[in-house]
Image (cartoon, rainbow, N blue to C red; front, top):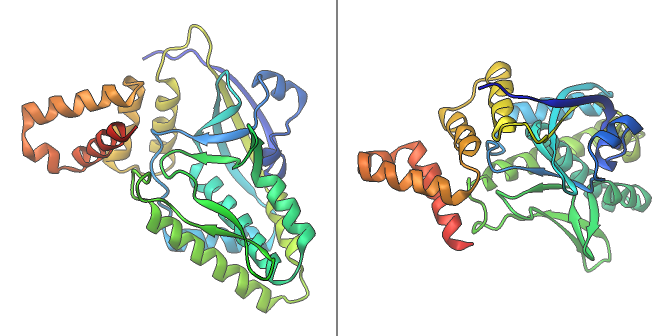
Length: 288
């Protein structure tokens, strides 16, 4: 497949990425103005291992770093669609949420205000998370406790968790909370605002791809597969999922493939990991 790509790139801090505040040439390229980022359905689920999360948190909290390349697609809408980088960005959002909770314990309300402004935005009168993930729904919830302190709770509705990621999110949430607590014990003179700023000062190389009139459908999914096959080993169902969404632009189309495979391959296909993935999509489409 020959893919015609219209690409632009820029180096940004995590702070500017979350603010969606870019240099003028990049902002012009991704027009219309964006309000949030979205993780599309063809992405693999959040699945970083515990050791990788711990290493990432420890490294970033010690000093600001370059965190690699993040690739997005810029549709004609109010969001950037994440092609590659979901594991890092999801972990960063969870880190900021746990810093928010640590600030509640230490009455650092100004830092809480800054974090809330960074990771949320208002759309149609509702406050929403800036990193939207349709495969788990709303996963972070702002609450006010009886003592009037503001906190963020992690809570995933199993009915919308189509890839069954809740255990991975909970593992990451607990590891990040523990790492922040232990850092505060080791370095009581370092404020939470300093840790927050070290994280926000980390930089990435951001690539944006624009949907142009002559671009073949499926190009973003092809880029996703290409990047991840080169950078790390994908599970077979991840590659299969990416190709499904590359050729099938609706869940209904994928369901049709699922039904065809069941017809020709019987119950063995339904019991396979690919069959499980398509069965989840089928159940999700029936509930919509």
